[in-house]
Length: 439
Image (tube, rainbow, N blue to C red; front, side):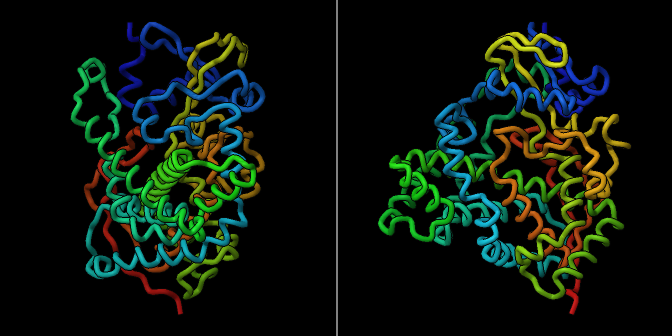
């Protein structure tokens, strides 16, 4: 009756990878008395996400997602989504991102000051939690402007409460069939109400000044106003919370995986440190021009995203009958896309489980099939914040490389776990040590 469901619940990343390797680019998989389809071949992914994209929509929504994100970019569809995307795009253009880099670098540097004493003492701490705190600060200031500082504590606490009380995915059939308790749901509802109040109060206060200097918020207001259909407070709330949660959690998780891999590959870490020293010297705040020169750092980021993409899978629902790779896809069928599986296919990636940043030299990437590497999803609904995410990761990695060395704590278990992102199940306990900035 349940088909492969138990294996999927235990570890969806491993489950989809084994199927993709064994059965090829399209696989029909029995789950709970019906069939779902896994598409893993890059060419077929292009057909699904680009060529035939109008035949599919994003997967059904869950109550928690609807309550949290409303009608923002993540959940919206059709013409409303297109309008939101056009308006929001202006706030993530390379030119706009570059303008924000001085503030991002300064805030990141200030946050990392909190590591100084711990590093001098070679203390161990859960850097995954630290990266969440840092990413929340950077996302909040980028989206809401310097005024975010006044609500940073309250907003961040509510955001953490939402994440802590997000519905847990069952990891076996027994857990799936157990009745769900209401206490967690009540705490989640309370956290959403708390962050709503915080944000609506902020909007009311900033509206008095026509949102001047309010980061992405100002862009959204004026761009929608230019279309003679200004976003109301509810629309602004939905957009901002969608961008906040989609942006900061993926960045935080990426930073955890990147520094885990660097701790396991001292040769790569040393090469990255040398590049940062050559480009930045003793300057602690990278400029946009500096970021453009951090080529090896970008290779490290991309290889880390290949192995541990925070977005481990996405799904679609067929709106009509279709055919992909010779398989008939019936209307209503569920289509799964495992980024984790596609980015580890042995027919594309030699020694796919090995960490090797040289896979992402310009020469190597020119040989990759399109859609073989899609850590930010792909097609017209790819992540709108790719440029911002890459810039933020480079800034933080460079600043850490200048001043600190992070080594995995002896005996700490590192286990990828599927949730809203693929995160380290037990956090990331690392020992901090100080480095001297080159003079």
